[in-house]
Amino acid sequence: MAVMHDITERKAMERQLRDSELRLRTLIEQSPLAIQIVDPGGRTTSVNQAWQKLWGVPLDALAGYNLLEDRQLHDKGLMPGIRAAFAGSSAATSVIEYDRAGTPGVAGQAGKLYVRTIAFPSKGSDGRLSEVVLVQEDVTAMHQAERELERHRHHLERLVEERTQELSQAKVAAEAASVAKSAFLANMSHEIRTPLNAITGMAHVIRRAGLTPLQAEHMGKLEAAGKHLLGIIDAVLELSKIEAGKFALDETPVSIGALLANITAMLHEQVQAKGLALSTEIGQVPATLLGDATRLQQALLNYATNAVKFTHHGHIALRVVCVEQDEHAVLLRFEVQDSGIGIEREALGRLFGAFEQADSSTTRKYGGTGLGLAITRKFAQLMGGDAGATSTPGVGSTFWFTARLKKGGGPAAGERAPVPGQAEQALAAYHRGTRVLLVEDEPINQEITQMSLEDVGLQPSTAGNGLQALRMAETDDYALILMDVQMPEMDGFEAARAIRKLPGHLHTPIVAMTANAFEEDRQACLAAGMNDFVPKPVAPERLYQTLLHWLQRRAPGA
Image (cartoon, rainbow, N blue to C red):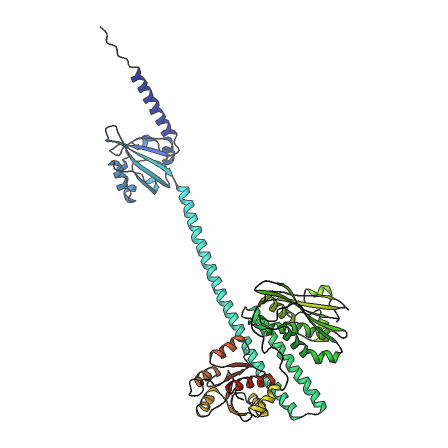
């Protein structure tokens, strides 16, 4: 009797199982990752070639090694995670610095390396733990690269911190230098303007006392030298302010017609003396615009004054035309054309730099600092335009600048040049005997200003410092107070604030009369409760206009 069973399917399954085991062994053996298989008791049953290469030992060398007794794993705190894998609950991943020479009972290669290990349980079909698989990878190079990167990062952070600190120190130093420069310029302005005020003031007093023709000629030269010196001081300070970014433009109504009328009036005597023809031309320009009328006039006057200086015969023309416009603003082009000596082409590019002229002979023959054109270009750029020139030697030159002005604004009042002597006559006629308080610590300037006030019939009282002025204001009533700023015991700012608190002096006009001529000085005076600002050296006509303005506001019936 024979019993036969069809085992084709079983044989096929056995073959598939062998193939599967072969593929698995091949994968394990050829894997670039080190694989170690450990039984539940901690004994290593199998390793692949990558593992033997990583640790430098064959499988036979592990006969006396028990993973669960490895002191390095205990010391580095990784044993709890590994025991969890042996308990079959979870996989554990770790990266440690492992010393191959420290492996107990294993005679392998010496040396340290960083190893990433993943330990996970392998269970049988019945769900029981059959073995634990450790997949390991040498990450020494990666770890070293990370450490090197970290070192570079810290080094870079240190460099950035050092550089930031250097830049911060440089910024502080630059700001300190800027403050020191501003303080120096302000101090120099004050120190120069104070004696210059005495010089020009005394010249005015002497001229009013009566002079012979020769003395009058000499006095005229003295006054011209004083004006020239003041012009240099103003130009240097103005350019310094612009370059420091501390220059602010005004925005007031501008009348182009009044502006050109002012300039022609200022140049009238010089033009007549040289026998030149002066003409003006205005294109289609709105009647009133908004801008800085003072700087526009200063810029155009720079051009016109140079034209008169360098033109010996012929004509000078002042033109203003509209280049472009929209509903909000216009771009105007201001031109001054002359028939003067002209400028070489290679010198034109240098003209608008600070302290530059066409050549050194120009300075020797005609004088000047070379600041006027530089300031004109700065003004134009601040107003959204630019400046330039064209010229032909022996034929003449055309200097131009553009400026963008806003449309609108009310009447441009107060722009027309005042009639000389008008304010002086009005003071003498309507305010004779009016009591004013003059606060000035410099004796010569006090004397000169006092004489100028008495010349128009005002009745001045004098104080040598702010504290004395405060005491006088407490006991007497004054229609107006002229206040110096830098004084001993109590300065003008403190004195003005204190006087404002006195009964009856809340609205008394206080006019600062100071050698501190910066815009921030003017703002500081206004912030201290003063009404107006007259910089030194004080031109008598400017002083009289200011006095007349505030005395009329105090007593409008006059």
